[in-house]
Image (cartoon, rainbow over all chains, first blue to last red; front, side):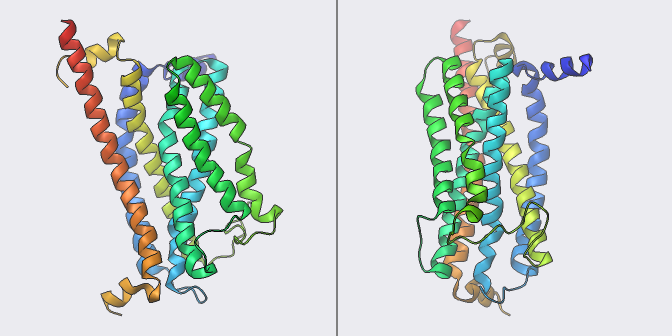
Length: 249
Length: 53
């Protein structure tokens, strides 16, 4: 147990994790491209036309995975922040920072695609519905976190302030998830329920899950690339960065 | 079914392609921006290293 702990902490050093992230990124790019490519093929050529919503329902193949990712990335960021606050590990804060723009992007995609689905199906681009509003708050939490971390010059203070904002904002995640249950919303109920039950055709469900896995791999790949840049930016004075980059970039 | 029927998405073309298009744009632009950002940082550190020598 003791040895295992020491091994984990070894990777919390940016100098050690930098090459690891460099090796992981291409693996996850390949997985992401393969899964999203296959998912798109299933989305347009295999999944049947919906009997009620026609071809318009195909938007859910990106809407649902993007919504899941927007919530999942936030939880992962909050997790990294908690680890950072407890163990004071620099890498944890860097990981949280590396995930934020991608999380914000998925929250935006979720709202955008939801809006493009809402117009033909509900007859409106936007409603102040519980789920949609809480997802919008999630987007603002991401943007607020990025603005806060960017606005404080002292790195340690910026990390701590950002982490506290993230941890407080976690309360919004169950609100998004259960909003369709707690309130009488226009938004439909959960497509896939916690107990594994689903209201979907099997091909549609698999397409959605494959796209979700593709988005997940994409997020890891992007986070690995971005965390490397953050490490270089923050540690540009460190000897390991100087030695690695030398005088030629 | 011809390719045009497929692209038409049964009168939902604007909504389906508006969604997939913007998502594709985001997921293509983000890695490109990341790459150029990484290159810029490496160049800046290399310049700092040269200046200090």
